[in-house]
Length: 147
Length: 407
Image 1 (cartoon, chains in turn cyan, blue):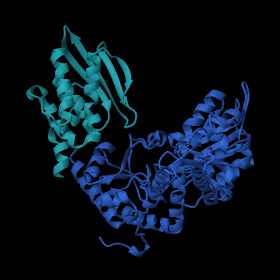
Image 2 (cartoon, chains in turn cyan, yellow; image 1 turned 90 degrees about the vertical axis):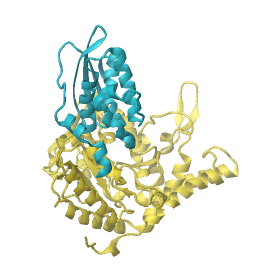
Image 3 (cartoon, chains in turn brown, blue; image 1 turned 135 degrees about the horizontal axis):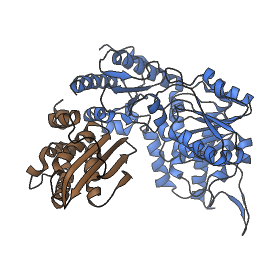
């Protein structure tokens, strides 16, 4: 199980089983993203005040990669400025392709998803919540279908 | 493990270039699409390399050759299904054929208060076209209640059948559960109340002899690509009396008789349903897929699949941490999950070992909801699988159960 445990590692397992910042709060900017072909759906909320992401919340159903990644995303982006959050999200997309960013530290636990690049069909699962967060920052709200 | 009698198994792996090029591949996703034998691929090449021109148009020799090859497939299909050539409509696949019947026959023959019977076992392509027509026409879509295993039974069918029933649209073999519908008896009963029966045969024709005259079905659709044929092509069988009366749903080249400014007339069935340049190479090569099946014979195909299934199921039921949804299945499809594990997470472990499975809702959300799960894993056996494939699959299930036990 050597290869598979690189992907399904302890950090991922911990976030899947004990998700941080789970549950929605009224009044936050909210976006629900569904992937009908795989059945995953994730709802992400951001509370942005004065350019700072004060709070990140999420709920959803899906595979362990998708659910854990939503939890990791919430921890990673919470407290960051919108500008830095955007950069981190871009860094995460690069990481998923196997490219380490210059500043690894600010990715936090998200760094463990680097092994996803060995499993290209799962990249969408890992990025779903991150794409939802990015879309909210860019003004999207409501519901959308992931293509 | 000791193998059962190997003599019952076919030895055809070398007919399939994908398996020759990927010797470690365990391909268990034939329900999604089958691999293609060399004879079909060669026929596709033959068209493109030797006479790759359009059909039904030119009056030159190459066009005649292409048209002859193309229409020969219709002849081969008709014999294969035991119907007349004019009852064979070429389509883009099973979905396309099923939609055609709903859009044409359904739109013109359903009225408010009429009833259509379907089931929760259906592929979306089978039930959604009728859900749409029923909404537009004010007809009612009724569902056969599945039994405790998830099967369609004649008894349950009788309970929803009435004089209001105008159309019955059911799968012949479920793409998720692999169950065979008792379709012949259902057709007989439906005809007693004057209803027409549309059969989704996408998962049956690849594995069993389907004789449309014997079944007495009114329409029956399937895809070429699930039975060794090319993608993008399929067949809709329809009784000629219905096809003749039906309006075309697509208009344009090839399907016309005479065109005037405000009025036009069409060719007879099946040609009025075949608009534009078709997938010519695919149509031509499909007859080689049928010939390939016939050269082996359905009896041997079924014996092969049965041996693999019995061997695999016997081991699978012993493994803790596996939920099997169709233990009594009579075809080569296993619907299962690693207990408590999302099917996409589990499927990655199989992928790591070059075992190709389908994971998800299989375009059949109604049965997934009926099973009260988010999706399943599906392993399908076909003629190119062998006992070694079964062993690798069983080993992966065991390791997966062990690995995800902690999760």
